[in-house]
Amino acid sequence: MALYSLFRSVRTEVVKGCVPQHVQSLFTSCPSLAADKALLLKLRKSTGYTFINCKKALEKFNNDVTQAESWLHEQAKKEGWSKASKLEGRKTKEGLIGLLMGDNAAVMIEMNCETDFVARNEKFQQLVKDIALSVLAHNSSRKQTGYIKSVLSSEDISKLHVPEGPSLADQIALTIGRLGENIGMRRAVSLAVPSDWHIGSYVHGAVPGQVGIEMGRYGSLVVFQGGPKDGTDALGRKLGQHIVGEAPVSLGNMDDIPCGESETRLLPQTFLLDPKYTVGQYLTLHNARVLDFIRFQCGESTSQEE
Image (tube, rainbow, N blue to C red; front, side):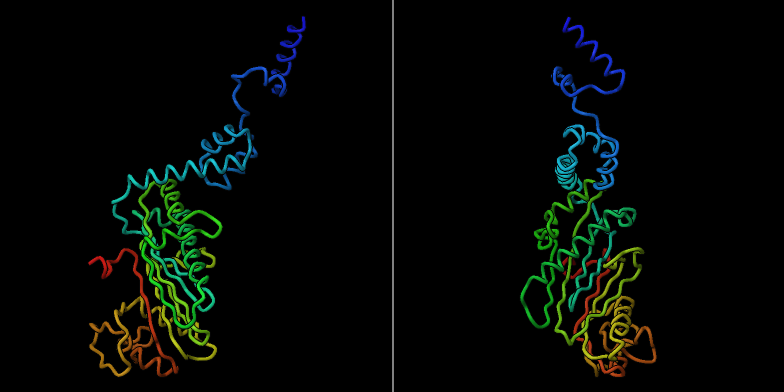
């Protein structure tokens, strides 16, 4: 009689769509709780993983969002490393230059992928930002003075960590797993200057909607002294535009004689934004002096690769 009453109670609760916890425990083959819809939406929004995978994770951990998210990241990392090894060797000529400015400091990186489609993806752009922030944080932690220029290879960068997060190598693998393309961190440069020096910058073909960082196909940094008191930012941007547009390969000297359109030294080049002057003459006009510059073009061959 007691057994009959128990099964009658179960049937009533099933009709209502709710099975009591103490009854569920009687059936050892009963699956874990179904994914809660609100939690599913929350997990999908916070992680960006597919609904199917988020549902699977919530069911696996009985709607514990923290455990579900941790498991999703771990699975994605494993999948990313697996995909990364399979895709290694595929050409990556597309991508973005990321340029980040700090206090008397700057970082410029090149991140490559296979297609322009992925370069426009928000996840790829977030990866560029994460790496630039990591490089800036790493170099800001050094207690050095004077002019510091650090050139980092892909191997150097992969050893760094996202602030309070995984290694950049893991972060790249995670993004490969999500986007399904070969992605590579190619190079980075970081600059730190004394307080009375200036860093100018320019990015061409800038990606719209970015906050705190600029991204595009071309980028430049220029280190200079002097300039108009209230116009150093404008002067730095103009110099950066010239460097991107005219692609000088060396600095040259103020008294160098220009060699026409084939000129590759910066100072004797005709100034792109005011052609009646050379760059050297324009700097003299504004009581300024360029000390160094760097130019990145996405996908270009470098001297180390040639």
